[in-house]
Amino acid sequence: MTVAVPIIEFEDVHKDFVVHRKAGRLRRERTVVRAVDGLSFAVERGAIVGYIGPNGAGKSTTVKLLTGILVPSAGRVSVAGLIPAKQRITLARRIGAMFGQRVQLWWDLPLIDSFDLLRHIYRIPEERYRQNLTEFRELLELDPFLRTPVRQLSLGQRIRGEVVAAMLHDPEVVFLDEPTIGLDVVAKQRVREFLTAANRERGVTVMLTTHDLADIERLCSRILILDRGRLVYDGGLEALKARYGGERTLVVDLEESGPALRVTDARVTRVDGPRQWIAFDRERTNAARLAAEVASQAALRDLTVEEPDIEDVVRRIYAERQVGRT
Amino acid sequence: MGELLDGIRLYGRLVAARVRAQLQYRTSFALDLAGNFFISFLDFAAILVIFSNVPQLGGWSVAEVALLYGMSNLAFALTDFAVGELDQFPQQIRDGTFDQVLIRPRGTLFQVVTGNFQLRRLGKALQALLILGYALTALPIEWTVDRLLVFALAVPAGTVIFCSVWVVAICIVFWAVDGREAANAFTYGGQFFTQFPINIYDRWLRRFLAYAVPLAFVAYFPALYVLHKSDPLGLPAWLGLLSPLVALAAAVAAGAVWGGAVRHYRSAGG
Ligand SMILES: Nc1ncnc2c1ncn2[C@@H]1O[C@H](COP(=O)(O)OP(=O)(O)OP(=O)(O)O)[C@@H](O)[C@H]1O
Ligand SMILES: [Mg+2]
Image (cartoon, rainbow over all chains, first blue to last red; front, side, top):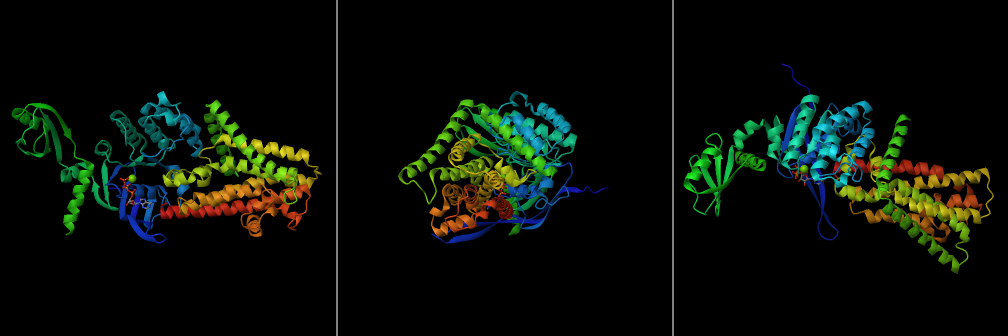
């Protein structure tokens, strides 16, 4: 068995932020926020890793440490064999990064002009640039708005542009911080397909943060879950679901309000007028069976199935850790 | 050397892209340009008002002040064009967009100042050129090689000095995000002083301007040299030759301060 050389390495990394808060008229209080707290993990080349955790867990800080934006307070960070904090510019040519909540393209330039400027900023060889652009244009269907100034693009169009901008220079690794935030279903699907293709055909390693479980389901072979700067889970999605997120919820709208329904192998968790929430374990029953059972008891108007929420899963993991500690 | 050329070419491309974008809105661009031109012209009108009451200002005639004023303003207009984007920099720190500068394979300062050129800023340069033109025709300057050289180098050197002051001043926001006002005191405030003969100022302010923030080298010393005027303060005339060297030193110092500030940002997190 060969051991793959990891492309991303974190070894006992700490990152502290010193925050000064006003306390009184002149006095300032100094507090230290530990955003990353002794984090260690390694990612092998060619993986797609989902990086999740509740707000403030330290995800963005990790990405900033990996891209060389921030210097770690302690520990060792390595990406593509380089030390991001020390070799920022060399590394920048070999990685791509995208922050879904921020505009990285030139606001008042047409999309195609932004790409062209990036070609010069990254010194992408002409031939390579043309090949990549042709391929990406097709995959993400950019043609209808390639000449539109970025400021006039819809969110979904802009994000597609941003994703392309992060990939034009053939990066070995891309870091995507919430790449599907605010996208409609179709746009989300396109971005996911694009990332899958880049990973499969070009061998690009992808690390993405998201609050959307569907992103993880469609894309990631591995999940890292972070909480308060520490890793609380590292493994596959199925194992994670089996352990923490087995429960889905069937939401039913009945014709009339009534008491909680009685259902086998499931339980009603909430009743709000004619609407009821029924939690069930996929291993023990399924939505179709439950729906039939509900319909036999009351007139059914509408129903939806809710996936377990990633936040929920994380919360449960954390609760378990809390219990484990005491 | 190749690096430098590549940087210059990229700079040209960034400017060109911006020009193309701004020319799409021809009318609004023309209006902006005209507006900038007239606003800065009003500044000069204010000086004329002063002169209509006193024929001389600290031993300087109207035309002489116009020379000083024109040199200072041309350098300032070019500075505003080159690094005016620093005005937006506090915002970049506040909303975190500076991070994106750190993940691209180019110098941070280069990326910040090329973020968003405003062509209309050139309106100020137009006004400065007109005033310089007036000063040069009105003044009986005997052009010798050294005076020509001092004059020709004064504006580029002055631009570099102003740019350096701007860069150093804006570094305040790496420590205090709302330090913008303090920075403006040095940039806009400093430029205001250079438009006039510095001998009219208080002694401490004068020393500060001449040596601490080397703004006297932008226009005052070169103008004295070109006019072959002895310094009312008794400083030697050869100071007028030093502007390019002062500019070089200022640029090196500014680069170092900026580098240190970015290092601070990256370890403290903004
Ligand atoms: N520049 C900074 N200065 C001070 N504290 C910071 C800074 N950046 C982040 N923090 C703190 O560090 C912690 C981790 O923040 P981070 O942005 O990494 O979280 P996140 O996992 O990305 O959260 P989200 O899901 O909300 O994006 C938070 O407590 C945050 O307040
Ligand atoms: Mg975040």
